[in-house]
Image 1 (cartoon, one colour):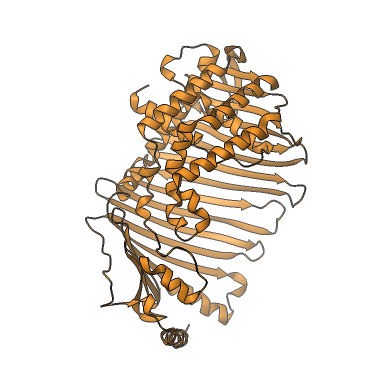
Image 2: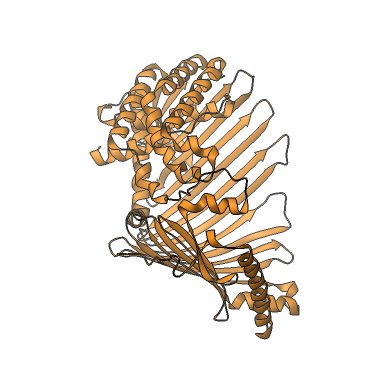
Length: 564
């Protein structure tokens, strides 16, 4: 495996280990999820380069290769989008979008009032414009509703490091702005009891994808620390291998190698206790988590004092450490009835299918079981069957949750056909059960996302609501070039929704064009050409209210004059 591949694999797996603070109690489902992550994908952070072909090593190596293959597929499909987005996070860009729609119902076809509304919708369009400069933390946006080519409503807003502003002609035909360091003064004008921060911090440039990525040093630490732990703690006797196993899928029988990890309840208990103890004591892991996650809360904490500790790396680290220590205590009496059994089916040293089952019972005798089935298996030269199924059951209440996603993919040169279904079932002893199925068939032209079209049809079956219908089609076009700094999209959506006897036909057309540029066009506003919100008087507020009422009345009259 190349250095690039190893970095990508460890990056993905390290991110999965960077979990949120554990709850104060240890319900069965949380223990199941933690254990499942380790058992199912634990092998992905172990050093593939040293593996040979013992059952244990084949199990872990094939997991590594499976995640590597998935990463390669994602990179092939979405490489241009990711490259463009990476550039857009670092340099200015502009986006222009137009949204149009339509609406009809057979039963209302001759209703004069509905006809008026229908004509209004057909002549309406929403125009959106955005300018942003992520490095300067500046942005501008406008939204306009046009009807029959005339502007009916519009709104503009901007943000710089020092102030924010907006303009809404329906309220007042001028810009208003707020200096961020005057936020406290303005807040007390409307609420004399306000005792929050004096300065509003909305500097979103502090939060970027780059900031959230693990450094090479962090990735190496997590990979070595936990890869070595997993490899050492999973005894070779836990694994068995069988060659030439019959595996049936989509009417075909394949000869695969199966490798099974089978741990008793006692062995599972030992492994999980050691893992939880290790994570709870890992000060370096806590630091990595806090340093990255605290950045997500920095801007929100400015207006929500309750999030202040979440934005402070030291306080967040302390909270994480305490939560993990509490979690460790709560899991002291947790057991794992039946242990863990995970079988992977291997083709050319890659996991193409797996079945995993494990159970757990906590100190309160809450019992749960998780069953996972995954599949990404080529069964003909150009056909692949994909599936992810998870069944989580609560043995105490007989509640259950099932998520089953299947996708049969056929690839023909530059064309790809996908038949996807998602089945969601819930059994709830305290609420109504759910049984719904979403299906979507797609024909995609274009091997990569650089230039691609897609025709999709979809439907939603709500199970017990047989009198309702929800289906439609989507036509999608996109052209993306990171080197040229352009990303264009168009979506033509047609849906039928409502009672089967008289459904509504809804159409939506969206066109969007984005362009990277040298500088963003952000308004430069101050007291010379706009009004400071701090200086707005009660008389000004009354004038704004009167202006709003007059403008709304004028808008309605104009629409009536136009025949709407």
